[in-house]
Amino acid sequence: MSESSNVTYQRIGASAGIFAPIVAFTCILVAIASYPAFSWTNNALSDLGIIPGLTESVFNFGLLASGLLAFNFAIFGLYNYLGKNGVGKIGSSVFAGSCLALIAISVFTEDFSPTHYYVSVAFFVLVPISMFIITGAFLLGHQRKMAFFTVAVGFAAALPWLLLFAFNYVPNVAIPEFASGLAVSVWAVVIGKKMLKP
Image (cartoon, rainbow, N blue to C red; front, side, top):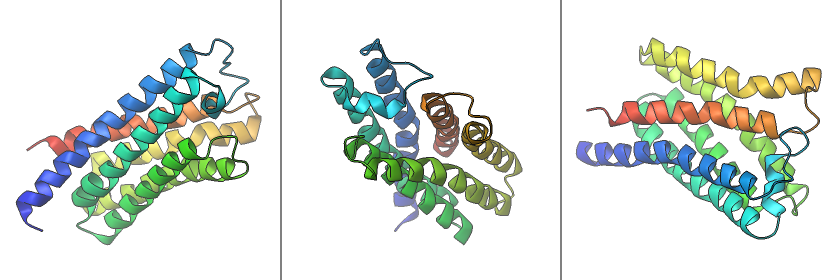
């Protein structure tokens, strides 16, 4: 593949990484607004995926579309950007796996138990793991600021879950799901913008 093709694919991937969180959180918030009974403390976000009508349609579309965008970000963006060393390739591949898990959450809703549980766990476990591996890739590339930022995001994505298991601070998982997803979304936007710089 030519250098110009790599740059083109990287720009496509970077743009996808910026748009993925916008699509995801817009659809999540619209789904929440469409279902007044939703509780941040007593629900999981995935509960929205089985509420008939607009709520389930918007929520599941958001996860599917953002998952596809994020997968393109991983394959075309991150893999080209970080793939100069093996650690970058592994980190990009693990992140791509988390994106496939996100897509699966939209397909295997809570009606598909226990599959829904497994793919949800896969997403929230693979995301911080990919962050920690990608941190290594940045260190190998002598990008220490990006390494620090990425490892911080990895901890931010994992911390809501660790606190939940340690202190059970909420009865359900909407808050840790939202917080963890928001952390990795900020990272994707920052990295995507960095990739687009000439």
